[in-house]
Length: 303
Image (cartoon, rainbow, N blue to C red; front, side):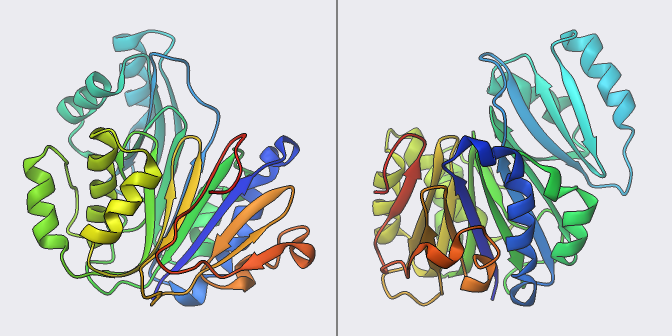
């Protein structure tokens, strides 16, 4: 049993308050997932030709100032580093592939949580309230975000095993449920170049979507294929640079609720996570139909 929240802000005037609203939603899901928590926030995009990389230190502390000096010496003043506890957000003035290769070669002690132009992922073991405080989630800004609280059932309680999982540029996934064919899919996807960092079944679902998108699918097409290829029970929330999507398995084993106003779209495992949002009392509210894809993009209507 886990808790999922997602928030897509339509009104640009609310972008500065995204983190505050996300924090209120996430803490309401504590009872569904006290083991660990994480958020993926889509913030200001970096310039073309640059890559934003969120890394976490496997050690309790890391010499981020030294890494910052190394970045500046290697890439010049266009490279930046912003440290938050045992995480840091790097901006590297290189395309994604060489930037990620540099991190892997020079700093194997760091775990890459996400990469792209907009996405930033922060996660840790422990209660959601601790994550919110440690990373100042309530102060974060952006266009949309996903959050997850985890009750571990299929893999270890560690920061790396926590959601969200990101296996492609600006792509992330949070999952409530369990997949039954993830080991077979992991072997298949590994042969096709998808890299995995953990044995978590949810990371396989993220990797599957990365593979389909790299093959030319649009997100909705990839999710249509997922309905056929992924066995198990699940509610997925998927983030992209432009928006987010929600999908429940065809039986609808795991709960989900969606609410929409002229100002925002929100989803959660339970309505109590949506109730603190401004205007929730007058929102259009519904339970997602099992097997139907719901997606939102900037300057676009609901699919």
